[in-house]
Length: 470
Image 1 (cartoon, one colour):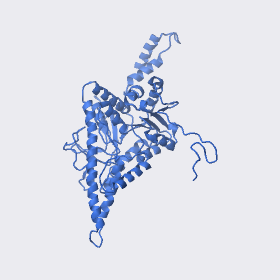
Image 2: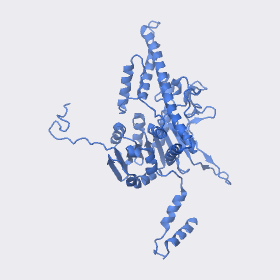
Image 3: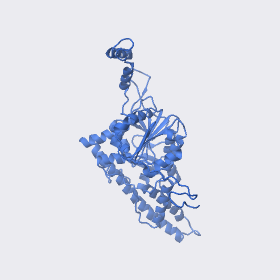
Image 4: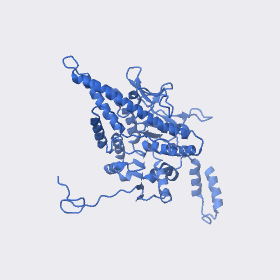
């Protein structure tokens, strides 16, 4: 195929329009939109954004997908180290081939530069292939290729375990820094608790009669769980048990109820309950042999921000960290529990009248983007993207591919993605507040001074109160 003669002229001599330069900040909420390189003023946009988001939060099914951006925002507010996902050095033979495979995987996902997760997946594939070669024999005897494969497998497995231990230590470092500030009683602790608590409660504060918030995350840390504990939110996930909570394939629609005082046989749903799905696993998940021999996934008692030498930090990181897909030794562990986790993700958002909010998610996981794109094929669904930046063009590319602008809300840029600005100026206040609705109803009932009936504003207000009480 012939290339254009110049960047602005096609081969037939016609001028092509110059590519549009994307602005730093982009806002699209219903009929209100803007694009600007300068810092927006909250006073110009909050009156449009807050009621629009409040309406979206009233959807029948509500989901929130949290990426590493939330942990990064909380860590920066706490002065804690942020989690670095940069590529590591393994120091083994054929490392260049592994890095090339990682770069190819990142390219397929339109992620740009590969990261540590891509390397781990590629290294896991190499280890699995070397495992196959190490068991091959020629005329019943191990060959030179077999011996070399066995040696390389051990070399790569040891190096991968070391990288995973270092990764786990960095996750715990971030948790430790955040936890120290959250537990403090000074101004910094109050500020971080307010930011995290207000953000979570905005989405979790739903009337108990509504479907619970479905909270999804790709993070390995426990910032969401720790924040929920501080707020008194109750988490429903697939783990069952007290001594060693174990992942179960059956959800059975388990929920939480209570019996109001003086009423028997009429249980009511408990407020402050959410469903949590950690799509890529967690730092405190462990693989172990189940009672029937098949692998189980259990959650260990690893404290938030535990030191690296804590007894609950597994010495075998290959079984401790679940990174999708895990560099596992058998297909059962590779498919379990991720098939169940992504089934929950699809079931939670791919249904009519569902709204999915994303914050800090860079649309770099193709297996997640595919489910979100399928959700948008349902006309009554909606996607609200809140991001600190355009994620190297991935958000724009996803919006362009799906072609569902009418079903999308965008708050993109350092201004809208800043956690403190978002919480203080744009997100609806976190409350299940019947008092506010009653006040609005009373105000709407008030007659203007000198209106029909000749009543004053004060008399109309008193009349409204009486009617409301009645």
